[in-house]
Image 1 (cartoon, rainbow, N blue to C red):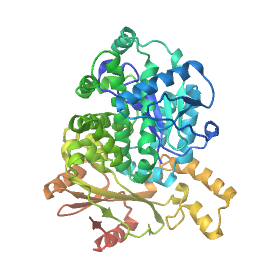
Image 2 (tube, rainbow, N blue to C red):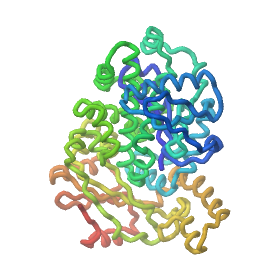
Image 3 (cartoon, rainbow, N blue to C red):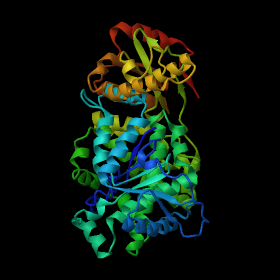
Image 4 (cartoon, rainbow, N blue to C red):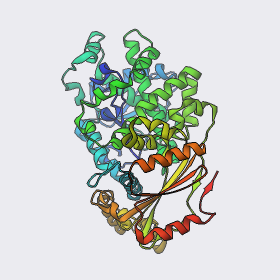
Length: 506
């Protein structure tokens, strides 16, 4: 499972100055979509179920009186804005920013699957989106741990409330003036966002929704965009109501000024200096998610938002083009690579994944700039598979199976000590393998299908213009791109792909 940062980004300059509160949601808070087991979670499991219309209490892991009262007050605001009710007490742990940052990093480590992180890093390397010495996880840990202002854990059902934000300096700029004029506390905005995630979880089981998307980057981004877009919109609703405005007015103002996002990013050197793919994947759930939720609410009201949790968008294509989600049209085509061998020589599969329209757009943006949207718009479906000689570094055996699973099967039971040693080894070396140059010992088979032959040819031209180390196999609406395949394996790869049973589309 992944852990996604929390808060939101707005496209408004005055919201940008707020850290923090807007446009860079990823930097201001963080949602833990994982299963961390930490001392913070070792609390009484007794849950207090309350009537929907009653005043909810806060079930504390430790006591922080001022913050406790703040949470109790904002629970009502979140329920009002979303038209939903908490079904049980919100369990909170009040902590410092550094504690929340450590929790987030540790949760990432415990929840991560090295081979999933590995295949994504390597794919981005092969696409030219990451360079040697770079990997996604290191950037994520740096960005989130240093900027986290709140954290909701969908597995342990606990909200980490960062209390030292109350002592931060007052904001300057337009947002600071707005907060001061209307007597709005910045920490109120942040807590509204995080409480909205708790509300989503109690009503729609967020953790399970993301689990169902696990293994597909495209689906993970799509599901997360609903959650982050909704929480961001709820935060704007609270801000607007405090100013005597409608939430719709403020949200439209934010969504209508996307060019100001660059000015906001410039205030965060860590994000500004990160590779394009890191910035894009970090911000997408907030920015695209906000626009998606705004469109859905305009068409169907809050009922439409609720339905988007029950039946999440199936791809980032449906987030970027909400009418496709509403009409259930242009569903992604399935490309099944399971008939491909698990290994080519000593190159072993790290598993299959999906890029989707948003990642393809981001790739095209780097190499083609103004043509990026046009190249990605005709996406119909894709699957990539990475093969690596460093498979053991990613926790896999020579058959592409997780080593821990192999131990359990052969021993008939879990050898906890041995498994723990292997787990620690893979999580410290696996995610760094690409950064240490292991991408030179790996390659990608990327199978795509497009809405029309014209769309397919446009993608082919884009790959050629990008100057990647790639071989292209195109037929009708299908395009297969071989990235970084060594000469020693190219014939075997071509032969495997020539079999009619290899690519199954649905």
